[in-house]
Image (tube, rainbow, N blue to C red; front, side):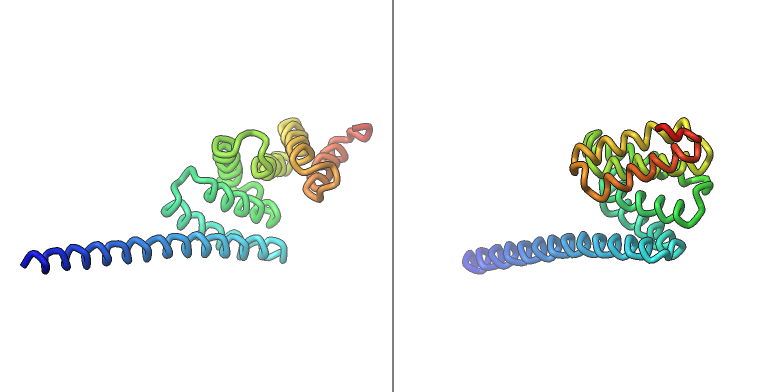
Length: 180
C-alpha cells in the first residue's frame, strides 16, 4: 500500500509539473500573440487604415488590461498605438484621446523612467493632440522634451530624432516662429 501511495505522489507531482509547464507556455504564447497583434496594429497605422487600427487597439487594450494589469508597460504600448491611430485618423478631439495619451505617458514614466524612448513616444503623442487642439504653448515643451529624449538615447542621426524635429518644426511654422 505504501508503494502505491508513493507512486500516486510521484504521479501527482508529475501531473502538477506538466500543468505548470503548460500554463507557462500558454502565458508565453499569449504574450507573443499580444506582440503580434500590436505589430499588426502598427502596420495598419502605417498603411493608413486608422479606423481598423483604432478598433483593433481598443479591443487589444481590454485584453492587455485584463492579463497584464491596468498600469503595465504593455497597456501603455497599446494606448500609444490607439492615440496615434486617433490623431492620424483626424480624431484628435475624441474626448478620451488626451486622457489615453496622458495615461500612457504616466505609465511609461513610472515604469521606465523619464528618459526612455517609449516616454518620448507618449510625449510626442500628447504634444500632437495639444497642437491639433490649438494649444501650441502646451505642445511646444512636449515636442522639445521628446526631441531631447530621442537625441540623447538614439543619437542625432536616428530617424526618430527626425520625427521629433519635424513635430517641433511644424509647430514653429504654425505659430510663425520662423527664427525658431
